[in-house]
Image 1 (cartoon, rainbow, N blue to C red):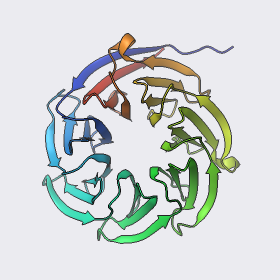
Image 2: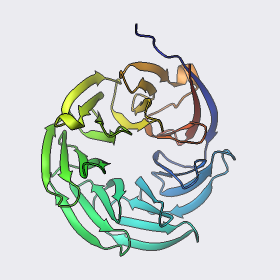
Image 3: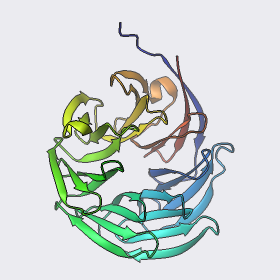
Length: 307
């Protein structure tokens, strides 16, 4: 018998301070701390224990779509659109490096070990060394934007979602192309492996959520018309039992990870949700709280309780 779990949603707080659309969220070292960045170039740190008392970390002279926290170095890597990378040392809260990389937008940043991968709007994935801050390599597999990155550390694979509607799987170390998947009807905005690494989930501008079976040669497992408009981001719970999607349709949706059944819709009408596109999600380990960022310039904090 299919017993659908009930989800209770409580909006805990709203963080304000950004003056334009908020595009990036990133977990900090402590579960209750996180970072955000926006179209106004402001990069801030926040504390879930002290709502709306943000601290400005940097003012970047262009929009920021991508942030990445390096735990071992305690550094925040900031992708400045049409320029390059800024690196903030979080112990001193000072910028320690700025590297001119590209004239394109920077859409995503991920690292594995000492290497960091940067997805750009000209279709290039730039590979840098996190110690020397030098460019080690480039992956150029498309003339369309590289929009999203996901790393499978066990299979040593890098998945890249592109605006040419494809997902390409590369060897993480040789960077050779292993597989090309005709995945969607539009840009692949979000990619994430499930916490057990058995599945790759993709979300697209075509509003479809797709689930790919990693151990079965990335065969399509599920295809779901998940939203009315573009899916901007996908985020799993810490335990991997549930995942979230957010969309240009202003909603956040809660899904059962085992069945891919929709459990809850969080929106403005029912939960005082965002008034415009929801761009990014962060499912923290701090009491399981969820953070969402929107074009409406706000960051919302949610408590989800599963019954």
